[in-house]
Every structure is written in C-alpha cells, then in structure tokens.
Length: 450
Image 1 (cartoon, rainbow, N blue to C red):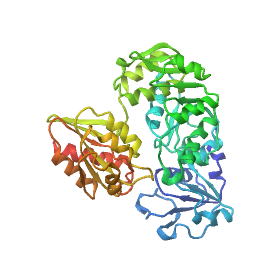
Image 2 (cartoon, rainbow, N blue to C red):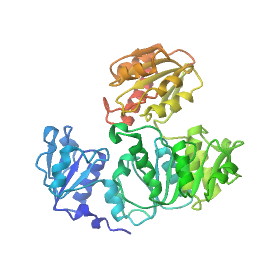
Image 3 (cartoon, rainbow, N blue to C red):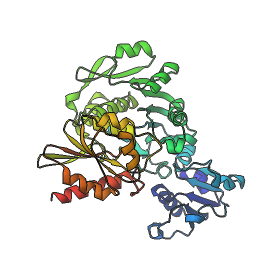
Image 4 (spheres, one colour):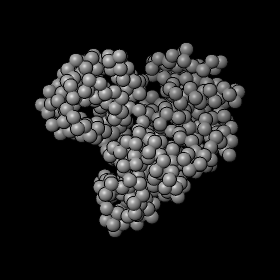
C-alpha cells in the first residue's frame, strides 16, 4: 500500500489552499490527523465561513479582496475550477510556489490500478455502475473523484479505484491509468477552457494516458479518435458490431440490438432485466461493462442492472400525484444535457430553465422544445439569454429567482403534464451545487402536495 505520508502535502513547511470547499476541508482534516507542523493558509475570493472549518485548525484566512495577498506558500492546493494561468497567481509562481490539486497529489503516490471515466455527460452514473459491478464480483474498490469523494485521503485504503475526472482535473493532470473511458464530448465548460478545442483535448488526454482506452462511439469526435488511435473497447447504442469491427481494431465491442446489450455480437443482458431501462442508463452501462471487462461475470452485470435505477438529480421522477409527474434533472448544467432530457419526455411538459451559464450557446434548446414543451419557465442569471436563444419555440414565463420559478410552474401545471427541472445552466447564481438546487426543487413540490 502507498504511504500517504509520502505525499508532498506532508513534506511542505507552508501550505495554501485556494478555494475552501469539501475537498479542502478533507485535506485540512488530513493534515490535522497527522499533526503536521506546516503553516496553513486558506484563500478564497468568496467569504469563508469560519464556523464550518475543522475544529482545532490554526489557519491563516485570506478571503475576499485579500485572497491573493502575500504569496509565500511552498505548496498551493487549488480547487479544480481554478485557472492557474490567471494573472493573480503569477506572483505565486514567480516566488517558487508549486501549484497542485487533490487529484494530482493522489496520482503522485497512488500505486494501485485505477479505472477512470470522463465525458460531458454520464460520468457519475458510469463510475457508479462500474463500482457496483466490481463490488458484486467481490472486488475491493473505492469510488472517488469528481463524483464528490476527495481523492488523496483515500490513498492506501483500497486495492483499486474507480475515478470520475472532469475536464478541469485533466487540464493539468499527468497520470497513468489501467483503463479509461470517455462517454461523450459535447460543448461544455467553455467559460473555463475558452475554446472547444482545449476542452476536447482535456477529455482526450485521458485516453492517451490509459493502457486500455475505451470509447463510446456515437459522437463524431470520439469516432475520429478511435479510427486514428488504438482502443481496447468500443461501445455504441446505434451501430452494429460487425460495422464497428470493420472500422476499429478493438478487443471488445459492446452494442445494443434486438432488446439486448451485446458483447462482440453475442447476447449478454436483456434490456428487460434493467430496473430503469432508459436510453442514457443503457449507454452508460455498456461503458461500465467495458471498464470491468474480465473483472466480473455476466451474473454480476445482471445483478447490478436489476438493482440500479439511477442517481439522484438525473431525470429523477420523484413524485406522481393528481395525474401530474415531477422530474428533477438538476444535473443538467449544459444545453446539450438538457436537450437529451427534454427529448426523452413523452407527455406535455412544463420545463424550468435557468441559472448561470458556462459560455455555451443555448441555441440547441430551441429545436428540443418544439412539440415537447408546452411552457418554459425561465429563471436566474441567464434567463434573458435563454429567452433570446429559444425565441418563439415555446411560450415562456420569466422570473428572477428559482423559488419564484418553481411556484410559478406549479401554478400553471395541468393534469397529465410533467414538471421538469432541466436548467441547462449551473446553479452558482443562487446555490452552492446542483444537488442543493435539486433538493430544494423536490422539497418545495413535496411540501406543496403533503
């Protein structure tokens, strides 16, 4: 097992943390556990809630306008969404501060096999499925990364890891993986990356770092990559395995045909065996099966298929009452993801759209709304941009805040209709996370009908 004390986090005499979120607090607790003598500084452009900090931590706090004052740290651990090229961080680099992250610190010392997943959509579901499949097969693994589990504190705690990585993580990461998969690539996080080219490169860098790359083939970018580079496995929802086997030199091919998930042209799992046989879940399952290829049996795949019905906040139908249906898909923080969710609705829909954007065009929403949504309730920071993008494709009501938006949607929802939260934007104008937004959505509606 790797010794966590070999991490440079424990060798530094002065450590700064830029961004004070869940991962930072986990690492600060780790330092406290090992009684480090390092001087600790917490830096944040937002106000730091002192009462939320671990008890007994003696840390200097520089927040708000003071976030970049007095660069002196030997090590600065940055939140994933921090762009390290920004002008304010130049004095740190000039003074010799090493910029890193929880993810980079983990991979510097982890010596256990890691199965990694990235993609614009489906990352969390895919890694969760892979972890459940391995657990069903009796394998010891831990689920870590962008799904919400800080990474460095888990070093030495498992014989294998299943890791979700964002484009933020991958932009600066240098690491090697046993297997890695990309679920898809659609426009996202352009407010961080600036260009689609840089965003795509961050995603594809994961495949280049893997001994056994896995590609979901139904997107042009990934198809082009697989044709130009060796891949271990190809997964597809629409293409036949014979066609795929002629195009690629993959060892394993997973497809969906005739009501079955197929492995190299042979029936593997009937779609009827799934607890929640949605198109998105089936796609993610094929990638999870490829990730765990040779590490489990067909019975393990079948068991997980029959037990797993999806993660919260992902097209989550949480209430049916008075002929109405309520769906929480707060995870839909990009237009591409909302398009998929909206197109999956089969009943007249009132859809809630809004929040803070990522620099991505909302134009794709227009076609998805036509003929599917009866009404769009627009809320939050980007409501006017969304209205401009969707034009007259659907009648709209525009409100300022999220709570007002939910109450408005409830007041106009008719019998036999669906109220869908699929924001197409992040929650950061009003909330700390998409989970907080989704939980409030469910709370307001559940209380309304209680």
